[in-house]
Length: 369
Image 1 (cartoon, rainbow, N blue to C red):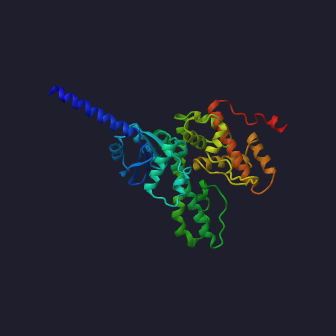
Image 2: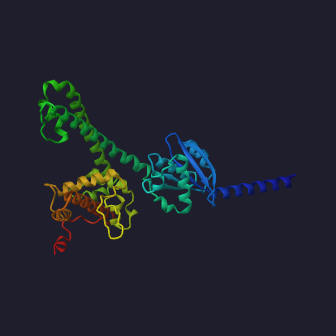
């Protein structure tokens, strides 16, 4: 009896190993949803093994995918993909996060639905994971830190909408409010509002003043965060026009300075390079790709506008933009701003990676010659 039980135990262990090895030869695609996530599993022959759906909560994810340790799994980048990736990695799966904009077979399909999206992810993963244009998520701590920047940006957007609303309301009776910065708008235009509009506009002015106080507190927190937790931002802030907000957003978005072997690769990563649609002898002039992080791209464009503006310093970046504007043509100023923003991103990555001292006019004589 004792010998027979050992044989049965050995057979059961072998069966479990075979089942485990069979599961490891599966490719899994998951289409994430707010409530339910659709799952598709295919084998090495490309046949669909199973279709199901799982609740999009950590407990359900761990319970279902915990039995597929060692499998390759693909999910699409979304608001929930960071925590889903961490949970799946804890379960021992090889996780690939697909760039949603690159997988055109999904977001440009004529028969798009959650079941087919999950199957498409699994099939692309089985053929070559590079077809999914994998992306890397920032750490959980960095995600919390960049939320401070995005929260401030939300308040700035709300304040701008309130200011534009007030200007539009009083314009209907012929009142043109003077130009001024958003920080002093509530105090400067309070006495210029017509009496009939006081009841409608006063709550908006109070909201603007309150938002300004909150924005200043966020800016103090961002400055302290950059100094204490991310001292590498000091090297980036050497550039005039780049403050703690832009430098911290750059560090938190890129994540790792060794992520790019060449600093010039940062331009395409942030969508600051023109799109291409060439065919034969035809070369089209198209706009920039606008891929990557739109928040950081907007901050870089704002810094580039300051460099090219009336208060911009004399530096190599400004000279590059001015030479582009001198060529003339349609939208010359816009193209120059984008070019300077791309150069600025390359320079910031170079300073971060090498730690050298920034010289505004470095090599300017050679370029002029």
